[in-house]
Each structure stands twice: as C-alpha cells, then as structure tokens.
Image 1 (cartoon, rainbow, N blue to C red):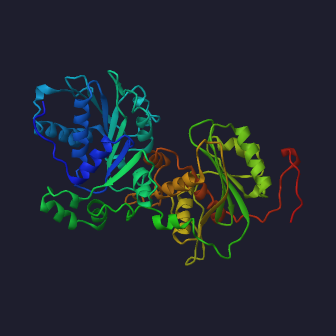
Image 2 (cartoon, rainbow, N blue to C red):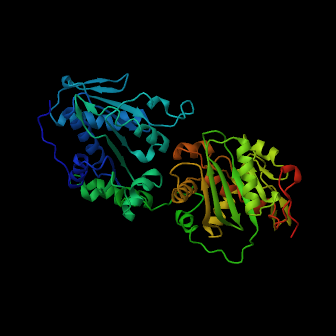
Image 3 (cartoon, helix red, strand yellow):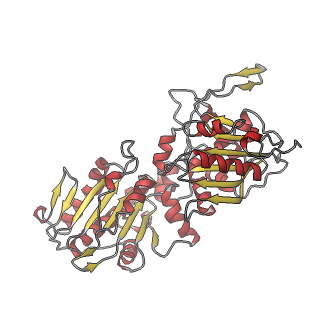
Amino acid sequence: MATATINLLPKQTEAWNVWESDEVTELGYGGAAGGGKTRLGCYLAITIAEMYSGSRGAIGRKELKTLRLTTIASLFEILKELGYAETDYRYDAQQSVLHFPNGSQIYFLDTAYSPQDPEYTRFGSLEITWAWIDESNETPEKAKSILKTRVGRKNNLDGVKIKPFWLETFNPNKGHVHRDYYKPWKEGTLPEYRAFIRALPGDNPHLPEAYITNLERSDKITRERLLKGNFDFDDDPQKVMFYEAITDMTTNTLLHQKKTKTLVADIARFGGDKIVFGLYEGLTLYGLYVYTYQGIDETITKLKATAIEHEVGYQNILVDEDGIGGGVVDGMRGIKGFTGNATPLPIWDFVKNRQVPANYRNFRSQCYFKLGEMVNNRNMAIKITRFETNIEGYTVEKALSDIAEELDAIKSTDNSIDTKLSIIPKSEIKEQLGRSPDFADILMMRMFFELASLPIAFRTELREDDGVETNPAE
C-alpha cells in the first residue's frame, strides 16, 4: 500500500481544495503543457479509490490505445512512486479495469465517436462515483455529456454518501472546454458547481529547462497554445472563418443592404438533430426558431405561419431538400429546395469573359466558402429580435454560443491530392461537436440566394390551396 506522501504544486493544491469542497462537483484544469494535469488526475483517482471502499470511477480519453500509452502508464508509475506493489492492485487489461483490494474499481474508457454507437450506449449501464476525462478537448461533446449522466449513480457507499465528482483536464481549444470553462471563467460567470484552474508551464517548477526551451522555440501555434495557454488564439489554416469575425457578427452594422426577407430551414424529424428556421432581412439573421420532436406536418404548419407573419414570399423560402426536408418541399409548392451534393454553380471568368466550372467539390462546399468570405469581410450580421423554441431551458444566449462554436468548426479539407475545394464532411463536424451543425447550415444555405438567384421583393404567392389568404403584390 501507499507509503509516500503526495506533494502537490500550488495549482494542484487549488484543485485538491475544490475536490474537498462541498459546493463544486465539476472541475476543469489545465490550459497548457506541463501544468501537472495528468499527475493531478492520477492522484485524485488513487485517493478516491482508497478513501471510499467500493467506489467506482472512470478515466476516459478519445482513444483507448492513447489512454494506455499515456494516462494509464502514468498512473502505474505514480502507484509505484507512492509505494504500491503490483500485488496491491489487479489490472484486467482485457476488460480495461483496475481493481483495488477494498472493492474500488477504475474503468478505462475510449470516448471516440463511432457510427455504430452514435448515442454512446456503451456508457449506458455504467454506475460510477466519479469520472475524469483526460485531454477532454479531444473528446466529442456528446460523449462527455452522456458519460457525465452516469456520475453519481454509485455514491452511497456503506451508508456514507460522497459527492459525485467530474474532472476534465485539457489544453486550449475552441470547443466545449472553451465554452464550458475558459469563457465563463474569464467573464466571471462560472456556475457555483463548476470551477476552472488555469495551470501553465511556469506553475510547475519541476519541469526541465530544456522542455520550456523547446516550447519557446516551437512554431507560433504551439507557443500560443501549449506555452502561453492562449484559448483565444486561432491560426488553423483549414479554418474557413476567423473566430474574431464570427464573434463580430453580433455587433456588425450592415449599411446599404437590401431589406428583402428570406427564410431558410434545416429539417429533422422526431428527435435527433434540431429543426432550425433562420429568418433574414438582407444578410442579417434576425429570427431564430429551434424545435425538436416534431413531424413534417407540424414543421410545415410552423413554416407557413412564420412566412405569413413576416411576409416572406414562397420564392424566398429555402429548405434543405436532402432526406426529411424533401417532404417539406413537396408540401409547400413554390418554395426552393437545397441539395448540398449538387454540382457547384459556374462562375464568371473575367479573363475569358464567360462562365467556367467552379472549382468546388459540391454546392455545399461552394456555399460554405462563400459564407466564409461574407463573414470574414464583416458582411453578415446576427441581431436576434425573434426567438422561439420548444426545447426546455434553451435560450437565445445558448443558441448564439452554439452558432459561434459551429462556424468555428467549419474547415476545408486537405486538397493537396484533390485540387477541388471542399469542406470536411458533416459527420466529422458532428463528431467534434457532439451534434449536427444545424445553425451553421442555415447560414451556409443563405448563400444560395447570393450564388443562385437574388431574393425577390415581397409579393406573397401563398396559394388558396395552401389554406391561407393571398396578399396583393406590392
């Protein structure tokens, strides 16, 4: 058994105090390389297992192979440092479980997205006391959310009730760790049950000088992320939109733009992805409608009602025609359908003075690159004055955060082999975000009107057979 004393760094001590507090049940720790993230997690895992007989914890990372080569290897080294003999615990490599003599267990999990298990049902039967996601910036949000629901299922141990505890350790990233921890920490809006401790290489006096030197000599991206712990730095050459330009969309003022209204809808059915309507005046998104768990008939009814209320002509309504959306297009004769896999539209070659084929993989890619151009040039704005949803607790603030996160996830593919410009597949974006990029898609689809045809000034073409009255043309 353990014979050595745990020596914590100052930032690790802060984290330990968080674990011992009564209020905080979720902790984010890290922000750069060398801040003692893995060692902190290992110390806590061993301590909880020893303190509470019969406790059950989980340590996850995106890939189990990487988890074994890194986190688990560090865990065994620390067990040895603390005076444990190999007979003091039993590691079942086949089941990926570590057993302690007092009945405590630690499960080792992969958190990667799998098309065969998109809902992470492999976590469904877990009943755990605590969980730690190492390098959680690599873990899909959905995996994290589902695993978190399993924490606290085994917290009444021989009549002793202990608090559930959730730990995430990570390096800077613009995904869920930025939204859940860094941004609210920076703005002073962290909820009482959640804490964030920023640990940088300079907080660890035990790091070799050569390690810091190598970080200082590395490329700019590595220096900003792993040395300075800069969550706001973004220099990914495959990003289609600059993060600063994305965040500027809520403050942009568009002058001299046409006021013609358009309505764009991304459709899903009964659960799964969201159903999202985007209402535009010119290139300003001012109306957002977010629904879930509704059928095509109800979606059509709401789409018609929105068009009537805001005086949007059918010729200015665009619906994703792939899959379920095709039924909406069929049910509302006169609206336009969007097909992402369609051939890109030709472009005008001013040298040849004629139209030539566009160098895009498909129409979806062409629209996303056009969206990137508009966003980066500050030619689009988001000013939500009309918001409606049937999702309990979902707010316009959360929607705006989701929009920014989704747009930031849009990347071009590596075209070193195929010279056609393309956007990474929707499945890859969904894996990263843990959800479908429905908000990004309605912004991308709005580019249809910029590329294919300009929206027509309102002259409602609602038909009598649609069950609504027609309005005279302007």
